[in-house]
Image (cartoon, rainbow over all chains, first blue to last red; front, side, top):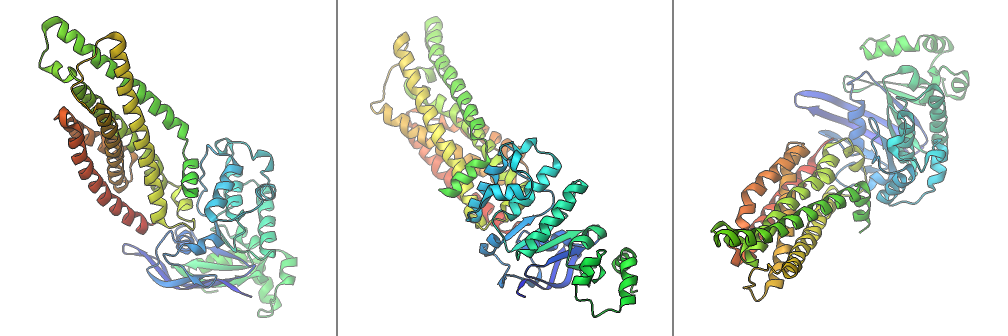
Length: 255
Length: 239
């Protein structure tokens, strides 16, 4: 499998506060990588560094084999929804996506993407008239319309109703199956557990542990995964006490 | 050109066009009032020292141009604060800076749009105002003496220079506003600059082109330095 993202010993400080400290991890092609951490753990900072919104103090990040630097060409292969998506609200969805495609210097079928996120009937409506959930969907549409190889989603399920959350999870899985790599962040353990193939737990500015789908709450997912490295009893114990286990890790406890 | 088109899509240009139309109408009303001021002042007490400025076309041109400079400088700062400050200092910055376009190019395009809109509309507005004033003066037979041979070229050159000056004020105040991350700061800066420099235009109405040319050179140089500082800041900025 091709490595899409390679984060090597990255460090970042704000004044005297070190937010990211020797952080390293990889994301592979077609994989959904969940970044889990408490509020202020540095998830958003890490994502922003990947798209050049924050400078890297030390270490390096490679995306599709190219180092993240002042060169902006690699950005056309990345789609992102960082924090709450913002739009030019006097435009409609179709105009916004068309503008986005022009900036990304790519062509795509806007109708198809709008259908995928369930906004095909609201495509002519001004964005200012959209609900919060519709804006979240539009943010995702903007992130995927140019068919990026890497999708970065910072807490994308915020503000969505349960049906929309289920649909969004399905959509992420479809995109991953088509070969898109997804980096997903959240501070909600169950949200990540249901969606990600691998979970990186971010604490003290670095990944303290990576967990695979062996600990998924879904039986099907567990069966599909290669879980030979844990015994059946260990796996059962972790599946049942997953949340406590992760919270313990985030607190710095070794179980 | 494509980037220009995309940047123009982001703003509601019609709002600014209506505002420019309002500025034009106000300038025209004031300009025509200037014509009548001369008539009234001269009719009652002979020509007073204050009314001397209204007594010939050079004086009227200087006054109208100074007023237009004031209005379009503030207008330029308002457009720039929307196109530049709101974009880079607001939440849109996350999207804006994640496009595969160099930050320097993007800022250059934005400044070009601000300068272009200001210069073109300031030029058209001032030329039209003087033109309509000239026609009105003929109709009402209140025309002050025409003591300049090349008045038309003077109007065209001074209007163009006024457009350049206004856009330079817009860029300078935007850079100051960006430093404080505030659109209000930019607009206040432009107001202060206008209060100080608008008077310079009327210093010597007979040499308005030379006065404005000197001001233009200084302002463009200042705007260029400030633009470079702004570019460096935006290239290094973190969101």
